[in-house]
Image 1 (tube, rainbow, N blue to C red):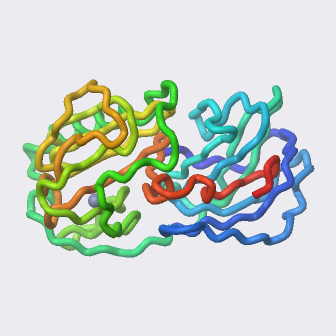
Image 2: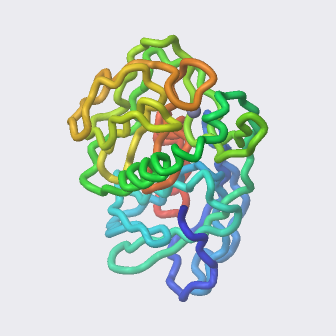
Length: 302
Ligand SMILES: [Zn+2]
């Protein structure tokens, strides 16, 4: 999780005329809504909120001559002519400060993280998956640490958007972000999409990259994490078989395993997840047309 950023920052100049955009947290095109300028576009004081983004959403801030992009303590280079900001599913509602350095000057933009809009999902799983036994807590903690190390490996981006489908054909997807109640107990919201498919269905790498983890993990079962460079990681959980090894280079569309029902599941399916710059985002946003990712700022209207 990133720390929320307070809006009381030094007076950087915001050069952009600000558009107000609304990112709808569902699959499909984001609704854009011109809502008039908040009037702070050229002010040197604290900028007004420029747009709204749902937790788990992505916005891009295009511009010429971008040196680097920043959110909280994290910095990264621009990609495809823009700073791409992924907003974590658990980011709390309120102002969020996006920063960049462009043509030698610091720029910043405040977006509003909308209220958490997702549905509640009640699930029944094996008792030890809702409430792990004490002798498994050490294992779970070690796995959490190992997984946490792969979110920001950096490196040259090896990917292009949209990502390729992890199953072919792609079944209907459901339930990104839903608040989850396992056997009556609230747990973290769902940070990926679940794709129903029979056990044994081939699972495909969404893009080329390097296998960061290929291992049996307590909750996610047989799991593959692929690092695509540029702090983009895709995840494939509950596999029946894993067909790649740690450190292996994989190609876009390569079979990396098969659909199964290992770990905390109610039946066979593929859980497909994406982290970008550490943030849990809706995979649908990166499986769709990147031109639909909402633009903030104004160097390139629309
Ligand atoms: Zn899932």
